[in-house]
Length: 234
Ligand code: SAH
Image (cartoon, rainbow, N blue to C red):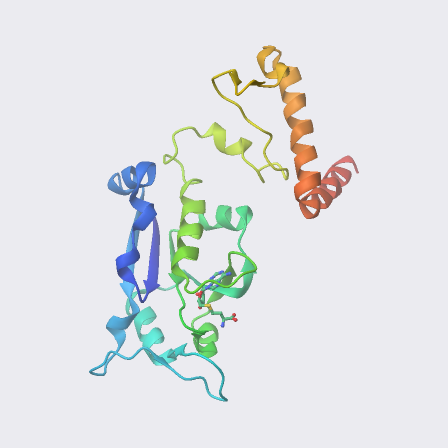
């Protein structure tokens, strides 16, 4: 069973989208599990203080290392990976998600305010992960992104194992356009080739569409794709 343990100041937000549809069923079937830890439970004073002002001045508040450290130490077992969601982190992507499926348990820390005291990262061997170049108010929504991306890769959750290989990023390209019934809608028909029944032709068309769209929307991915094709030839 794959497990995600999430450390948060807002436990009531969970499981949120993660127990809907197939993910909810998989949770019931114990294909995966979710443990939510309220960081505030580790606070010791009357007011349950979890944050304080940064040394050296500056805006906002930081999660205190003693409280966060205590919270982590009370739950995390040896050799489990720990991730702190942070805009400074390594960029999360499809490969990152794939690697996380190989872990038995992952721990995710959701920051708030200005973030957390830097010392916690080093002492607890924590990896920083970013879901993109923008600033969120807290790590909770980012944790949904990370867990969602991993869950759909776990065997037995989505049902159609083959469909996963067709998605954007799987072959280094973005996905081709797709169409369903009605065949004509608002005077627009679906591309003829898709009605031809010629599977080789359809495959070619889809690949060329994937290439076009990747070149247009994501020159960075396109460059990478070209390089990987060149290397294949050598
Ligand atoms: N002061 C920090 C931003 C704090 S944002 C900085 O400039 O780097 C508050 C919290 O939201 C962070 O602690 C983190 O857990 C979460 N967060 C914000 N943006 C994120 C992103 N792009 N990816 C992952 N987590 C993010």
